[in-house]
Image (cartoon, rainbow, N blue to C red; front, side, top):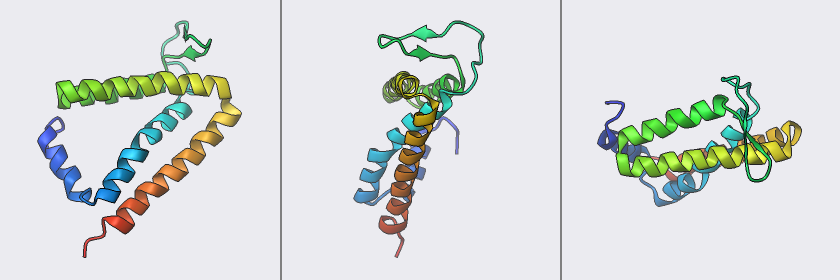
Length: 137
């Protein structure tokens, strides 16, 4: 499968996601998984020694692994398909900005607990979606 072959990615995805309930579960839980992963990555050290960007709510955007993760995913989506990928990249950057703001406001001691609970809940939903609704008879 070519890394940037959108049709092959859709075919592979479709082979394991044909049940409507499982598809809905994925639509509901994938972006919160990304968002909360970025919350955790907010607390990684800066990759570039430059001043962070202050946001409207006085939170800070840091050029760290969360930013790198966002850039890699955003570029991957754009390379798959320019139109749909641009929307997905925009959503990735929106998640990075909002997760940075939430993480800054909550602080490490609360943010990691919120992110861990959300990850556990969302991944459990994903596994139930596959184990219960995508079972091949």
